[in-house]
Structures are given as C-alpha cells and as structure tokens.
Length: 411
Image 1 (cartoon, rainbow, N blue to C red):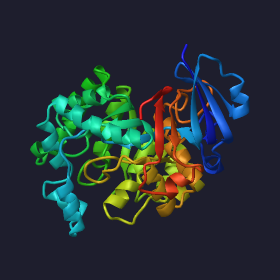
Image 2: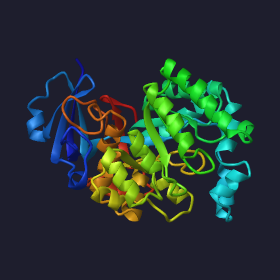
Image 3: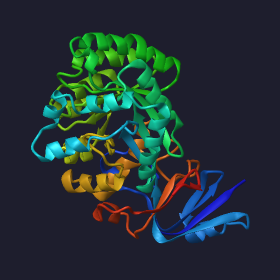
Image 4: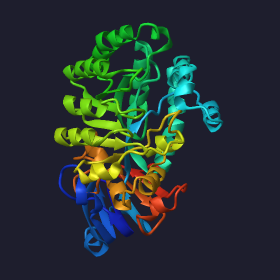
C-alpha cells in the first residue's frame, strides 16, 4: 500500500458537503481547513483535517509532501473542451481584430469548417501528438479532468478517429463526447438534411456500439442545426444510452435551453442569450448550465451569460474553458475564474465551486472527483499562493506549483 501525506496547507480547500451539485449560498461554502493536511492511500483520500489531526496517522512508510504554507485544492474539472484538432486559426484572430465577425468568417468558409479540413488531413498519431501538447497546458494550469469533444471530423471515419485519440490521452482524465453535429460539412452544404441522416443513422449507432463516447452534444443554432434537427439527433442519442449536452443560445435566443430542459440533458452550455424563460426551464428540469466566459472574451463580445440570475434561480452553475482553436483558445481555468468574477460577478468561492465539484457532477463524476473528501480520488493541486482568492485575482499567471492525479505528481 502506497501512502502520501500532504501537510503545510495554508488553506486546504476541501469543498466537502452534500453529495450533489451545489446551489445558491452553498456555492460560497468551500469547507476550508486552515493549516490543513490530507492522508492518501493508494491514490484515494483516506482522511483530511488539521495538520495536528493528520500527523498522528503518518507512519514510517508514508511519503510526506510539504505544501509550504500554500493553498491546496481539488484539480479543476473542465466540463467543456475541444482539445483534438489540427492546425490553428491565428489568421482568424487577426481578421477579428481587423473588424470581421465570427459569423462573417464562418460564412466565407472559415471557422469550424477550416479546422475540419485540416483535421481530416491529419493522421491519428499527428492528432494525438498535437493534443498532448495542449494536455500539458491543461495540467500546468491545474486541470486534472476534462470533458473532451470530437466535432472536427464531420464524417464517420474522422469522428471515430478523434474519439479514439481522446481515449488515448494521458495522464489527464477525459470524459468523451461525440459532437458530430458541430457544423454542416462542406460536402453537405446544399443538403444539410442528408448530413443529419448520416449522424443519426450511421455515426451515432457506431459511436454507441464501440463505446467511444459517454455523451452526445450538438451546436443548436439557426442556420446550423435548428430545434427540430437538434431534437431528432439528441433523441436518437438518448435512445442509444448516451447522455445529452447542448451548445445552447450562444449566438441567438434559439430556444435551445428550453430544448435541453425538454430532453432532460445533463447540461446546456454557453447560454449567452438565454432569458428568464430558459433559466426557469433549466431549473425545473435540473439541467446544469455550463458557462464559457473565455469564448465571449475571445470573440470580443460583451454579452456574458446572466450567471447571477442562474445562481439566484437555484441552478448548479458550472464554469469551463471551451478550449478550441477558434473561439476560446485557452486551457486556463484560473483565467476563467478571473473572467467569472470580473465579468459575471461570481464571487471567488462561487467560481471555484463551479469549476470543481459542480463540474464533476455535470459529468457524473461527483462521487469520485471535484472535492477533497475521504474515499475520493486524490486529484489535487498545490497553488503558489496562501489565499484561494488570489487564483482569480492575479490573472494571466500559472498558479499551480504541483499537480497530482490519484496521488501521483504529474506536474
């Protein structure tokens, strides 16, 4: 049996609490233990407490890690990422800086379809090599689990290729999501209904049969996949045992949040244009909102989701990076915490909750990760600060000093 003790925590941010996602005032309770410590056995947390309480259980066979009077908290759980793709879209970054809009670039053949063309031409090994570079960025920023979407293949063999790459990523933990309905590919632009048929009749059954994904997502937006097309694809996915997630109300008030509620989706993501009706529907159905302020920032928009209204309504809000090559090329959850507080007025505690335990529950992992409690996996980060609020306060800084997954140091 391998044992590890972590001592010298200025704040041990445990997020201990009820075995469910946190809502309302619960999001501000991080269950912090001052001068905390933690005992780990075989990759799982055995006990947490003050240093004096834990030190009595440290034996000669135990490796001791001294946090050096720093913050220790769970690894971030990033519940919305697109980490596998070829090339990048730095040229579009320049175009947007010159005044072009995301929609104009996409209409001219750029955007998602540009990345699709590059990704189709890449081998599986090339994609895995590129992804591992981005995975190292996630780890260096304190993220230990990501939800990872396909969506840059948009034809059967390439979507399966992307999902296989996601399954091969190490040491970061991944939760795979099939996003074949990310965009209408070039070859189906004149007949998008045929592409919907392909997703429903061929791709989804094969993804389910090969157990390549746990979830199905869709970019529900007028002109891409409307409400009826989205309902058809997601209903088919649900019948095959896949959980549901939606890109919802990002560019317009499309009714996608209401659709997510109707279908009992796990999450509705983006929600920049969601109104009170959509928020109420999400609350009634128990759908978790995943908010992505990095994409609002990167696109030069000022229309952030109404996070405060969602929290006041009792929704278990989640924060994620939306890491992707076009609209949010950041793997930094600390940067997302900063944006959440400065632009959406989440308190630092609410932001931490949304990026850890609430995110874990949105991925059906809340009983395993997202908090530092006995029995859970020992995924934790030692941040180079004494107060957890510094993580969002000092933005543009890599705070993690050490990152551990199941008690093993990976950074």
